[in-house]
Image 1 (cartoon, rainbow, N blue to C red):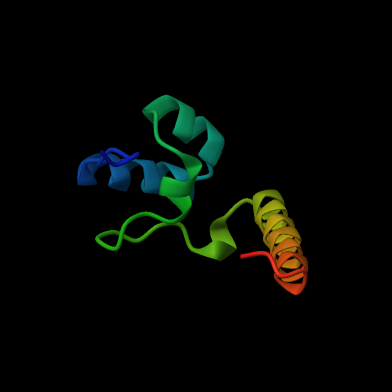
Image 2: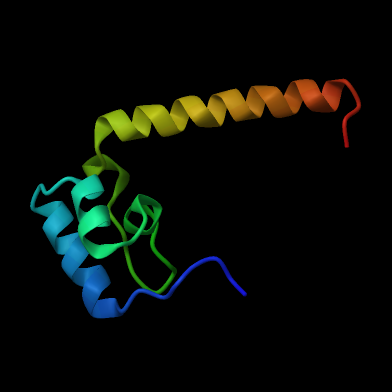
Length: 82
């Protein structure tokens, strides 16, 4: 069984419209019971929020996490981890 539920297109469109109007993504996520990831990067069938409209603080956190994980992977591979 997959770990996600399909979000109806009407709900996706409503959430994205409200996010573009300036409502915080975290608030929309809580109201609709969907993840922030689904709002920022929805399925291939819809378009999500462009990166320039994302909350800058969230983008900075995502970038930091990416860099840390990348460095950890590099060091694990250097030690011969599978």
